[in-house]
Length: 79
Length: 141
Image (cartoon, rainbow over the protein chains, first blue to last red):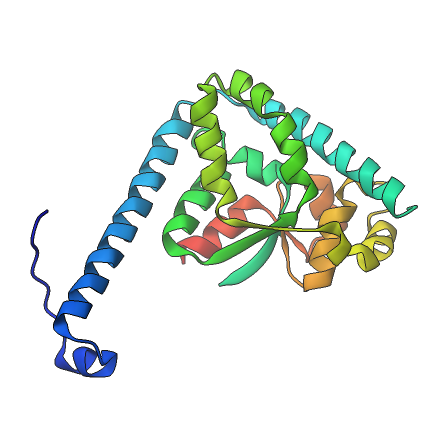
């Protein structure tokens, strides 16, 4: 565990109606959550940068999915 | 948060390197400006094509699964029962381009736009369909 110090305006503490210990827990969980999000974004960015998928691939696969979806709707709702 | 319908083309295009769609999902994960909405059926159907997507992308299967999971976290999937009353109207508007009926029906039901890179879809519904460039501009504001 590391320890970090943050400064909050006094009115934030007042509005929160939380103790300093509760605010510290909240801040720690928000920082952790945000960092996990940023890591996921970075992983996605790096992964997609290596992808060899082309627009033609996407068009072909999308077409199969859309056709299957339309056939399903057509049959189910007598369109 | 702005709700917008997304089609499968825009979703899969997010797996093309350096494309507008991948930038949209990256930026939106950070800014949380849009909540994407899609017909539930594509979730099932896209799952059937995972191996093919992995193969064509030349990425390991586990990695493509994670990438799709990342995209899916930003999409709310809606059952077709919810927008069935709008199917007929969507079919009339789209005439011969019927494969996009479920997306338009959903968009009509929730009264929102559609993110799609499909040029024919855009031509048929110019005010309803936004292409990835337009959404990216919106996100970059």
